[in-house]
Length: 404
Ligand code: ASP
Image 1 (tube, rainbow, N blue to C red):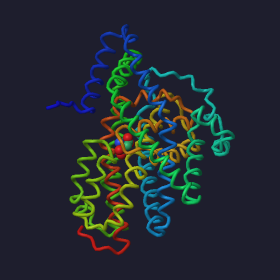
Image 2 (cartoon, protein in one colour):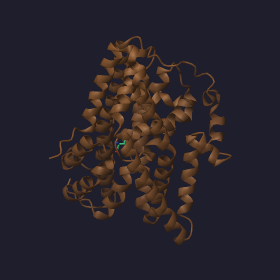
Image 3 (cartoon, rainbow, N blue to C red):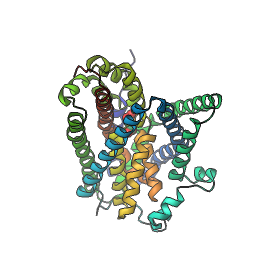
Image 4 (cartoon, rainbow, N blue to C red):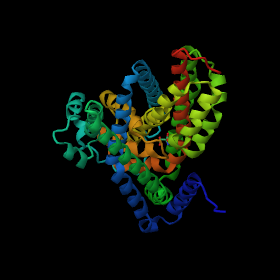
């Protein structure tokens, strides 16, 4: 029998080892910090193709489903509204708890010359349109890449059948490969975490302060996830869907626990569909449309996490984001959650989208990397919870007789 130590335990172990190494051998950190650099470089390597293929596939599946008319529209509205509510909840908690404010985490403070930070809101909007899409790829201009991907995906659904089929299948294939590649890279996360944490601890003169900031950051994410999952979604299910949220919850506990333990909406999908259909009584027509789409496009937990993490990183760099920039964060967090694949730690990769959109250093990812895998379990459970609530609400609104 092959004994396998789950990735999240490996990362937890690496986290503890990194902290101890940073405390006891600060002068030797130089010999191991390269592991962190290698890991961050590998993450950066996959961003553009992953985001591009994920968004194009998402948009084409929504666009192709337009034939489903009313159902497509309802699903789209549900995804947008709940994701935005989730992000606003995250925005609230990160602004109230301020996990990164005033903490000396040993981060470089020279961020003044970052272009986006100096741009006005209007200029940021104009610059979303790339003058050269290849330059946008090369410079990691995520908003431009997303803008292009959305348009490209949309127009794939508007061309003649032969071209549509070739391109849809091509991008689905590309997305599959990128998911596998991401999975592969994430497998090295324990080494990355070890290298990065050891360096952070050795550089941030004050380990207690680092631990305090990280704990408040985690608390902000957990509170926001809690409010969204326990209050917002059940209220919507109750009053808009006219479905009993408690009964519905009981019918989907298996997929929720699976989501929590695998940190993958996509891996959980078969169980989600089975629970929603068999225990909830939702028709296959609705579940087979809303749930596979929801597993990659609708991620409430990831959306609010993106917002909190990006603002936390800004705070840790000593940057006060203006109102306009926070609006950009909200907007990009929504896109990042749509672009995130339903696999472990995909949300971490997508943080770079927001960081580059508001002009923060991509290295900021290193700060949140160490605890990402733990938060991932909870946000994935909320992602799947959001998908199932959507499925029953939409089924009920279509006049289906449910068991919940
Ligand atoms: N693991 C999440 C999911 O599969 C995505 C993320 O990393 O936020 O739903």
